[in-house]
Length: 187
Image (tube, rainbow, N blue to C red):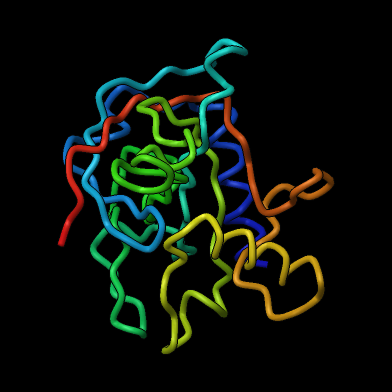
């Protein structure tokens, strides 16, 4: 029941309280194809136009935390979210997952998926998965697709269904776009 209340609060905040321009502080980490990159949040476009909404997704991989949590968290596996916390954002504890980055894919273009505008898509890890001592984050869009397929086929599900009744109940595609270039791959 607590998780349903948390999900309702997340969904409500995404639709009622648009993200502010400070939603992406400079120098945030992001995963792409299993590697970590640093991105700079330059501009947030709320209620973007249909053309801008065609941008590739930036997946916000949320962590369920007890209501009222405001300090740093460390999961039982020892992992700490990339955003730990970002209290000005609707999902304060989360990782960023991109579909591409400089130097990946064909001729370094990630098959055309590396762009600086990214459409914000929210997902939430299931508590059983996130709080497992064996947890490791999803770090590539291929791994995300496999996790969603496992959920749909009735296998152990790493994600919470936060958008019931939609074609993909694990994702909320927001009307917001973040313009954030990738500045470097972290080693």
